Length: 157
Image (cartoon, rainbow, N blue to C red; front, side, top):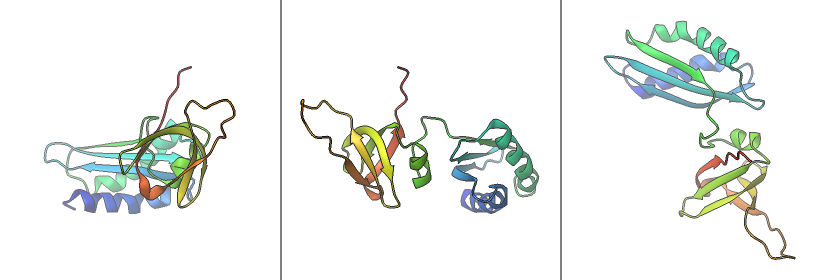
């Protein structure tokens, strides 16, 4: 195993049986190989969220298998994505229905709105903007392939 891609693919295979029949899902895997100190970061989540002790258990189970394929020194980090982590999958969008999102489309336009629904092809938001008194609220449908990046807007109100 000498490339980041090969290590990442092997880790994905090792993770599969630990995801408890799709209860947990992989958000991201980052592998940084180095002769001095390598690092593997695995971000997991579930529809209900993932607890620290669940991350710890998966890390423990995965650790012995990764030991065999990694260079001498490495760090393994298994955690959940932070609230500021970009949404990357349909499942991540579903988990955030009802929350406000900032969406940057591939053409560079930016929208902010409440995520109303998600299906396999697209999301629907209600755009946050000033409306005239009797102006109709029209949902905005955004196909996944038009989305460059989107993230949850955290409010402390």
